[in-house]
Image (cartoon, rainbow, N blue to C red; front, side, top):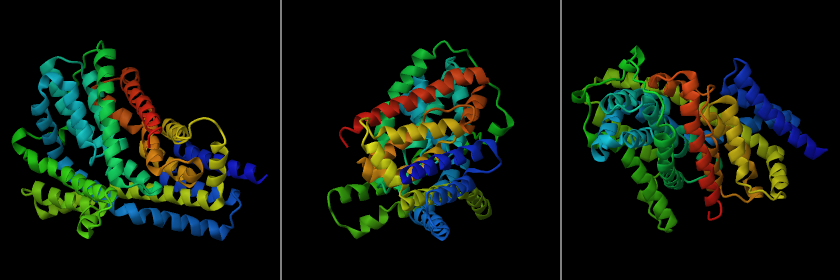
Length: 438
């Protein structure tokens, strides 16, 4: 009877999250908290214990990740409004060449989406894609999918993007390790996505939409853009610092200075300061402060969702649901790494947000890791790639990609949804192969 009660608590908790997000006016943050409370009660916990666990789970998760998310969103906003993101895309164009327009756009999106939300990144770079389409006479559908896929990859796989960063915090994964494997998996996926776009979608119709008012806000002349070095620096410097710390830890080399500067909090703070003082020289203090304060509204939402996911995970752990489900799955013959993949995919398809799918799945899976025999890193990667299947009409990013590429809904589903599905499916296959070696 106890086992049935625990399974019922988990199923009802998931159903509550999906129902509230899809069918009511309740946003994901309170939906996750409500689910955590209900799961605790059904799972047999005392009422006082449920509330204490929700509170401690929320605070414990944010203690390790809240500051980094805030800094990361600040840095991304500076790169967005100063034109640094567009400058990075143009620099990649010079290195790769305009004849490889799909690759240029994919690489541009891949890099820009590390600190910038993929929705904003697409808006910023969409005019560049349109210009390529006018100059090369290539279909805007294919170019829009290439740009969208590049942004989609690192949005799901490479910190300090909030989704994978939150998953790393909940599962206790070293951020540097996740950067290395996230970059590796996304790099493997790049030629697969390019092949699909170039050969499967080569007969898509030609679309070059007019620039609308929303996009015009982000358009800058080349003369107004910052230099290439300073545009890349806010991203490259923190990544190098974090990877230095990861490398020294792997080599068992104790160095307090590297431990401090390679801590994600310090590293991303350095990136923020480089962005502020390197990219806003011609902006007034009032304007810069206003941009940074506005960015925190985005950070607040991600922080709350991440903390709520931590609260749900804490309840699952304290109630014993995590251990019970893990032991039940461990007795089955199928690869255990499929569980986080399938769960993240189902949540992504049901409610649209990759970030919510990643955070929720990580919260549920975290208490099961030891029982499943999965390493935190492998589980983290499985969740991230699972959440890439697939961008559909309930995903806000679907509408950004299709709207700014001039696609109607039918073409959008045929082109962009299938591209994102291919990305997610092959990502899952890569992680499944990795599961045999890590």
